[in-house]
Image 1 (cartoon, rainbow, N blue to C red):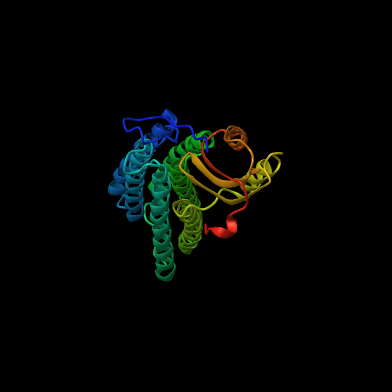
Image 2: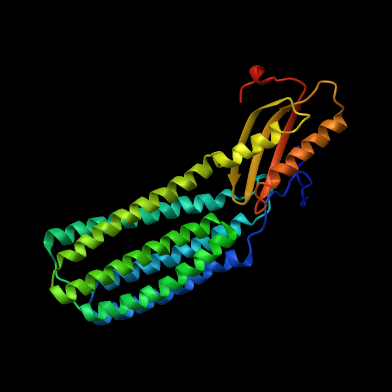
Length: 313
């Protein structure tokens, strides 16, 4: 029904989304810069101490840096206005980025699981524990600050790309903390198997969290419906209108910052077009108030009778 159209150069293309905020665009850049700092620190200490674990951690930080760069590009791309080829915009780029980053995090989790099992089997000693502890403390402080910042940005923006970045660095914070704890235990006990046990536990946690992120991104890409509570509110709004006799073919989905709703409403056959249009506008405005933090694209078909049995969805 009545949809807010913002004309671009092509009069047939409509704008249905909000631009990302400066905070959203800045967050991946902050994450990239801090990942670079961590990578340099770990490389310097790793080369100086000869610690393979630190060098591996440095490689992980480099990977984090490139993932954050990818997220920055994804947010910028999702800001592009709809065009002739992508007439509903680029909102799903966020879900696509979250999907692939979840796969990367999951792969990291499986690798950590493998390394944990190998260390447990071989019972390999940990060298340069003192230097490793210092580096891990520095890393935890930096990552904790980054996680706090990304959590703040996600609460403000509800951006799926920021959420995926937040998950990535939460797993880093957890793994770094666990490594520090295991190094402390080994330092005082020489129980090298502790490193393997902590590694396996962290790997399992990372795989679980990454799977949930991949699932969420996949659901958006496959046009999963809006949350059940929102769908129920939409149904309630429609059925509570005194001029609407019934409705059918209610479909919902979300892409980026835009929520899409399509529904057929049944009105009296003798109602005027002007009155039908007014009723549809009232329904649309009520639906938009469910969540005013996003844009809504509401399409309402007005039927003189229930024709759901005559058509397939």
